[in-house]
Image: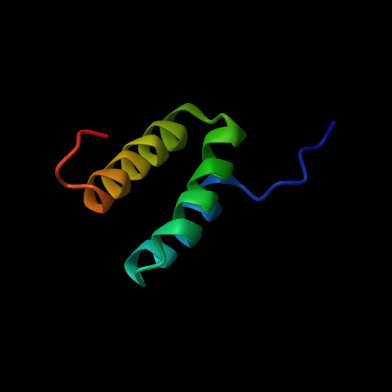
Length: 63
């Protein structure tokens, strides 16, 4: 069965665009889609980027 979601690499580009424009919430939502797509390399990077966004949002508490 064909997965109708966009390719993880395309989603990573979209998420980075939102992140660069300061829209962390939407970036995290798109990174989540990358993680759910399950491709190992992009999922690992998406997780790291979500963790970094969480650290920036709360610098005094570990993510």
